[in-house]
Length: 449
Image (cartoon, rainbow, N blue to C red; front, side, top):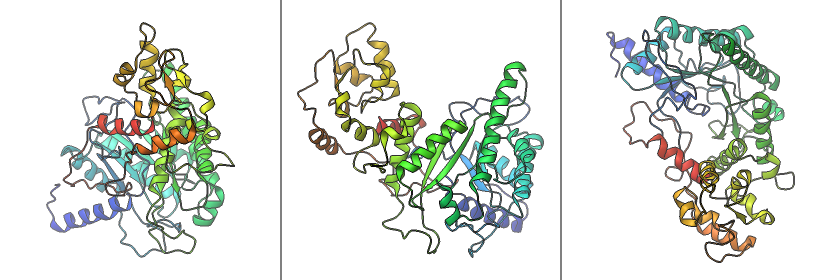
């Protein structure tokens, strides 16, 4: 624990830490770095592309970032937000210097390896963005902190402030908040889609320019080298899964985002415009959206292949990939010895890595089902959709009802079954046993493939 010479100051700092770290827990738009930057030997810290965090929670979320708000004071009155202006909640604020000392102190004690920094809107977007920039500038220049930093870009802030902040951060994010402009108008009247998309476009352009300059000049400072992300709240407004997934697909295509995060709506305010809580947050829906998002980014699917106007929501009982497969049985079975890589990715139970192993191994050998199992193929799902050199593993029927009954007999491991909460932010002082990164990521890939 950090020790302060003045007891009153210590109590004040720790009280602020409690308020502002708790206020940040509903923002899930943070992950590991995705960027490599070694320290120069003069400062502290570095970050590697494999992810700066060595400990993950059981649902795969990074837990070794100091995730905090600069302040939970806010001039906006978003109906879904715990920190909205009209709420009577404890308020606190760090100065840039205080937050730098806290970050460096935690880093030196090996509590954290990076910082995720956001803020309520205090005074104006420009004032808030300048405070965020000042914090990052002090960390990088005065304290020589070279670890991972993820910071929020404030919609409506001056473009120059966002540019200067982006030169100091590893990743930036601008939260879309709600999937549609109508949803923003109803629940966040102070926020506008144009103000959100403008900094998102600026960050995209800055990243591209930085890469071009880096190809010409080796030591050019990098702008947001780990890319940008965003977050959408799921369930606060009546949009369908198809609408949400289409928005995400558009963001990936037009703004080159690294990640879109989906946050199950948690009703923390009493407001007539908010949906009544029915059995808690829509966690299974959030899970299906994450699975579908993986299919968009890594498996070559398009949003309108998974859903459509006639079928706008995901099947709660089946994951999106299995659901697509049983609705397109005319494309199965596929022979693993001859099928294209693109088609292998569409087979339930075959993931990206196992598909690559199959393509590589079949060049020199005739594959058997035992070989597929060693490659990581989940045969309990794949067996209905594949053959090896024209032969089935055992007799099965290519009928939708038969396959669905058998797939439903295989219990799907959901990431929130233990405590039914995925938005919980772990305390820096929680005494928990954490899974290794490879194990937690493997569970996620397995649930998707």
